[in-house]
Image (cartoon, rainbow, N blue to C red):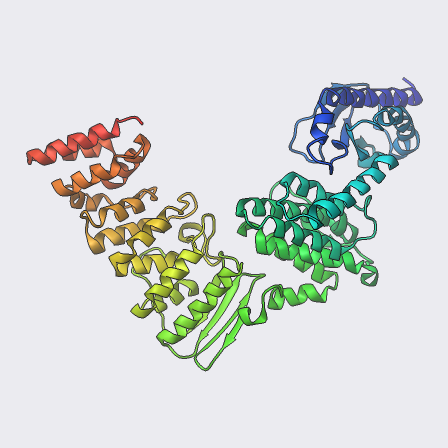
Length: 561
């Protein structure tokens, strides 16, 4: 087959594959979808295909995770096409074949105001990625800009009602679309962001959803629009992408508005995204520093600047405290070991947390005291030492309890712990208070209700310390059980005799009454090491009442709820 003929055949087959994709998406009720919000004028804005030696695959999204919507085998050239043949001969044919199909949706909600088709070939010179079609429907574009203006004016500025997260999705992405707003206005973007946060502040769950939506849009803009201008990006299959600055970049021509928005992106990621995203925000700041941003350098050294200066620094003759929200560090210098020094340091930390400082922080401590809690397996960190020191002063117990209630949070961990020593913020205060006085048992139980035992195991040595310190009776059993329920394994078999008195067995059965079967099994596993061990212990009991209670306990394991 002549080369010209094979090029025409490949163009026909790729076009047919894309037409098949169009046929598929036409089956959706696009009108119903876009009627959800005035800010959506179309559904699809992108399609891509891959052509590899006759294999054609069509996708709706620009990622490598989804399966192709269309997949077929076509003709293959005897030799791979060259880049020149694709760009000079094949692409014009493809554009001609696809343009009429795309224009057929000018008055349809099926396509967004801008629609791109990307192509990838395996050529003689290597992989080739090109934008085959970049079509803009000017009428839809003008209408969408008008809708945006009306929404901002009538829904955000003129009303005081909560907004819909779906509206925030389109609003945040449209505002960052250079096709809609080629001249970036960071002040406007931030004003709109703040306004949406204000309108939705009464519902924390919705507020978090709106905020996360805006941050995702910012992150997408930063990674797809801003950074590629200045950096070569390598995206591994796993882990974070790596960036290498392009040679010959003239830093003086970088758009200061874009630089400012990228800086805000980093700060918002660090302040509001889950703690595992902190490295992404810090990495972005470091890239901006490479581009000459003095503000990024200041943030790395001093913090984001979003906290009041009085909240991130304190100093008197006994104590000096400072905080950096970018790295989530609190630096404390105890000049004089006293209850007052630790009280003021606790006040400093609590004030930070109440104003949005990351709960997954760490303390950098300078002090003469070097206390540790009597719980094996805890990290010998400066954060641990600070709270162990503070726990030497009983008059600080109320402050430590207030701190723990403020600091505890599911899926949050101190920044200087990892692996087996990972622990939730508030851990050291809760463990110390729980071992110091039974009045703090409700605090221990509240803490245990938040523990993620898949990522934290320090509750296991604490549970053992609790049993050994207080023993087991009706007053301690609820707290001991709450702790054991958050353990996956532990050396509790040596303590099982403490649970086997008639009074404790009766109390344990009452405690297990509302449990599901798997919960009852788990608690018995922790205490006796499983059903067989429990049966063995039951056979050895000579007291009739204890044998009856053991039998009831075994029956409880079989109870279905």
